[in-house]
Each structure stands twice: as C-alpha cells, then as structure tokens.
Length: 235
Ligand SMILES: Nc1ncnc2c1ncn2[C@@H]1O[C@H](COP(=O)(O)OP(=O)(O)OP(=O)(O)O)[C@@H](O)[C@H]1O
Ligand SMILES: [Mg+2]
Image 1 (cartoon, rainbow, N blue to C red):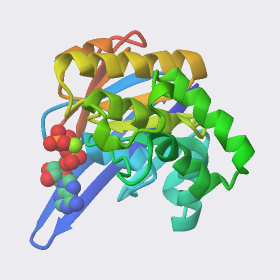
Image 2: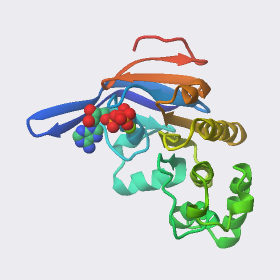
Image 3: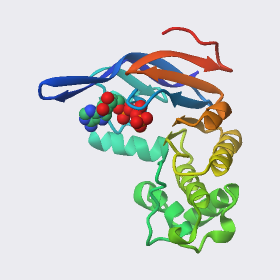
Image 4: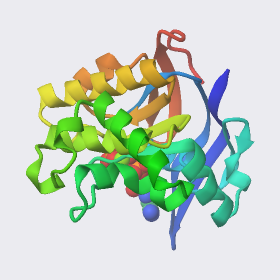
C-alpha cells in the first residue's frame, strides 16, 4: 500500500518574468514502511518534493496523498494538525533548541502539539532516547554534543510522537562519512522497530547505498526509481 503518492504534481515558482518548474508533472508512490531516498543534482526538486509531502507547501497542479488523505486540500490549521499527528522531520542542521536539554528537545513536540500530560510524556521521551542510544546524555545541552549525537537527538524528536512518516532533507549533510552512515543505520533500525516510513534526500553515495528504494529527479522531472521495490522504469 502506498503511504505517500504524488499524482501529477507540478510546483511552479513565479519570479516575475521567469517561471521555474521546481517539479513538473511528477507521479510517484512511496510504500508504507519504505526506507526511501530522493536523489538528483542540486536544484532537481528534492527539497520541493519533501516540502510537499510534509504539508509545508502546496502543489501548483496535481495532488499529494499521505496516509489516505489529500493533504494538498488542507488549510493552514488542518495542515498543522496533520503534521503534528502523522509526520516527523529531521533537518540538515539538526534544528535543536539550544536552551533546552536533550530530554526537553525531544519532549517539545509532545508539549506543542499533542497536549499530553507530563506523566505520559516522560516514558515516551525515555523510550525514544533509549532507542537512539542517548538516554545517558538526556541532561546535556545541544552545544555539549557532537554532530552525530545532535542528529540522534533530532531523530528521537522526529519519532517521539509516533509518526507514520519521517521526512529528512539531507539529514547527513553536516556529518562526516562514518557518522552519516551511523545515523542512516539508526533511522533504518527505527523503521524496523516502529514501522515508520522514511523518505530522505541525499547527495551522499554511501547514504544512497543504504536506501532500499531510490527515486531519481532531474530538473524537476521524475526519471524513475530503483531498488528492492522495483527496477528502474521510466515514469
Ligand atoms: N522559494 C523559491 N523561489 C523560487 N525558486 C525556488 C524556490 N525554492 C526552490 N526554487 C527552485 O526550484 C528548483 C528546485 O529546488 P529544490 O530546492 O527543490 O532543489 P534540491 O534538489 O533540493 O537542490 P539541493 O540539492 O541544492 O538542495 C531550483 O531551480 C530552485 O532554484
Ligand atoms: Mg534541497
């Protein structure tokens, strides 16, 4: 079953005289439980596609379905609720809040969106910090952590609300090769443990090698996919 589908999606940016098609008539499906990468040269539309899947942006044409819902039709408030309930995000630069501890950073989405009592939040935060191997660092501040540790915390934060889908835009771009690989391995373990679907973008060949399915974009055009869930086929 597809968890995410882009159906004839075009995203056009109007820059006065010039119009840029960041995505042109893209149709693709990501299966539930996939460990999928979006790949392609700089400017090919990877971030644009992730933003659309994350209900952070709307297509100019076409439809984006996530978990059976047409998210392109949601208004701002519905979109925010949808993100809170169903999605987790991991960013290139970790985006941890510097004044909060590791524990508090991971707890934050539960406070902001799910309005959950404290005695329920604690065990959830503990469990996910344990899963990413950071429970013994929970009182530290982000500035006291290495890049790889920060990204582990960011992965924990993305997972704490038990999302169906985690979207990660170049999650390893600021990490050295070995640490990058560890973070991707961790994400895959989380997929195995929680059944969460992961879609991430990357430029790094070693990270691509760990994806189970690759979606190729070139100049905003989806040129095919490869991997365990099918051979390359022209879209
Ligand atoms: N806010 C915007 N306004 C105008 N054009 C944009 C905007 N965002 C993206 N674009 C254009 O859309 C195209 C796709 O950009 P996008 O950021 O999705 O590429 P990308 O594959 O993520 O690239 P990178 O690997 O460099 O991150 C590019 O031509 C870019 O210049
Ligand atoms: Mg990008």
